[in-house]
Length: 114
Image 1 (cartoon, rainbow, N blue to C red):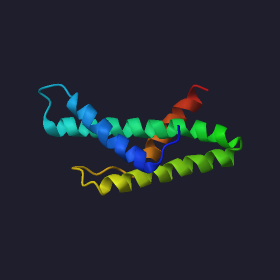
Image 2: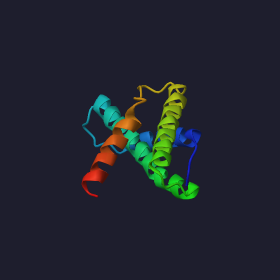
Image 3: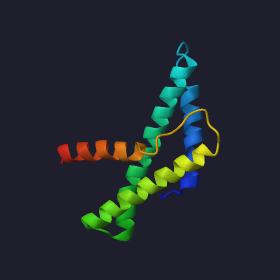
């Protein structure tokens, strides 16, 4: 299912709080927040990566240029998510380049394993 940035921003907060509440006792709150933030960023970005295939199929797009256009579209969606989260005055900043970093890692692994 293709989601809008508002939906992902809401999901981000829910997932972050869920992960934060599951952190093992004894871990400092600062470390717990950092781990929850990183895990949540990765989770949401992975969902955006999975949407790429769904969008490509929905649009019956097969060219490399169409593929790159969808990747850029997902990057713009990630940046919109980050802007929405910034308005919520959360106790952390989210890297607007995180999707590109995760996408690069995913794409690199995909190319290695064919």
